Image (tube, rainbow, N blue to C red):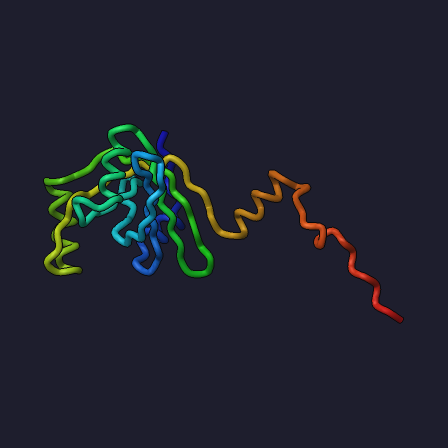
Amino acid sequence: MATAIPGDLIELLNDPAATKVLATVDEDGVPHLAVKQSLYVDVAGRLVYTELLESSRSNRNLVRSIWFGKSVSVIVSGAGGRSFQVKGKPVKTHISGPLFRKHYQEIRSLLGDVDVAAVWIIEPQEVIDGSYAARSAEERSRFPFFDHLDRLVKPAAPAA
């Protein structure tokens, strides 16, 4: 079931200065993570990723994911500790046609004489706010008794 991507995450994903990492797994379940700046959110609220290399691990793992209905994950991090994880499923890959051509022209205008292997569409399934404040609040809510002892000790009274 698809989930909506919140506006602040769309803004972050579409920010060229943000760091974006795509996580996939291979046939043995071994994770592969790679920084991929060619990720953004389309008007339908799906992640769009442009892969440049036909034989890259990411591309091979995405093919396997679409064949076998496996999930991938994207981490995006920006200024001020803003961070999100999006778990999703690849639902389509474009290797020709108008969307492919658009990305091909854009990438070549930015990077010069490069290839484009595919344009991947990833449907978001879950969005997790990865900022420290959000993670800390969730952890305190779920595990209220998980405190370090030093946080429970009362400070000693000052000597008179």
